[in-house]
Length: 49
Image (cartoon, rainbow, N blue to C red; front, side, top):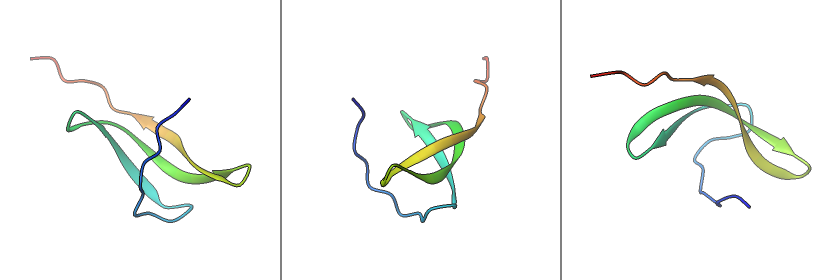
């Protein structure tokens, strides 16, 4: 299923989502059926070199 990660944010707070030290998305911490989750609000486009 998914990975369990530790968050230092509260429900409703904004969060930056990184993969391999690269910002890939921004989101918001939410509760879904008594579980914490993240709703992605913005996908960051990759820069082309």
